[in-house]
Length: 411
Image (cartoon, one colour):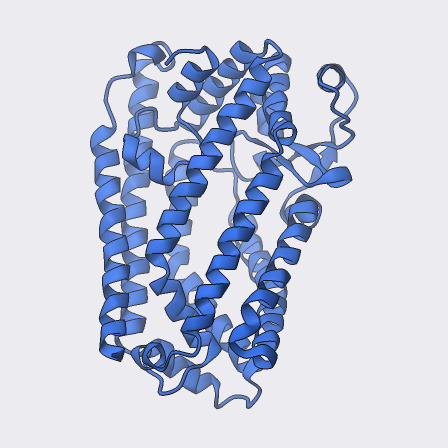
């Protein structure tokens, strides 16, 4: 029976890779050297040629990166290295919590170091070549160290708590582990910007002036109490612009990248803020949290069956089930379900984006929002003609053209 599990895992991993490459190929073929008629004038010929080149470079790097990840997983699995590594970690300590933490720390560090060249090439070659990169080598290294620290602290605490719960409850651990993860997610939703983002970027309150007055005026018009508007130094790493809404209740805040403020006029920034406020008005944060909770509950329930499977353990190269190794197996076996839930979540996300756009348009800000989206798209050299199936599976936001047509009421 363990052989069936072994080959099932290989089929799932290879199948996911081949499917993603098929989609990537469709997306490459869909990329047109000509602008869609509805977007004529958005780029001049030289700028659009630059966009096409940027798309091809990113696509090529994605192919190499995904191929490496798949080969790494398959090599570790087929050679039994996932199991052998755990057996080595078990010689370091008799405490299974400590062993589990060491195991995941080693796996994380090995994979992260091996994949770092792809990140370096992306940041200092592709992004630099096309004028986006503002990250210095020192900032890159510091970000990497900060990421490791946060992963060690938060990841270590979560894994330790879940292993303790599993030790006490056995396969019934799933509901308690679910409550722990959901509680953690709630805290992160409320304090992510204040705790995590602040480790990497400075966030300062939007100063008094024309822009803040315009935003306050719109907020009053929409009956939206908004005290927390922050500007983030996104230009520290990239020239790309963005804005986001985060938090719940009194902890909600809107964060504007300084690049967004530099690139857009006041009316366009207000339209972008109206879109973000639309997410709050439509309760999209709560909806996303509820969906995530349901998906997490399903994951833990299925995981409870995998953790005690001797066949799964033997397929992973060990004789008896252990939490850490079975969790790795679960991640690979869960691939098809993960893809299906990802498609569903992205579909809901695109729907939410349309609703937020509609909220901004209801205040007469539709054309200003379109103008802002155009500028952001041009500045980031985003793909204007992605494959339709690729969009349905991977895109959390509708395309520029789809958003423009929906805002203007065009089917």
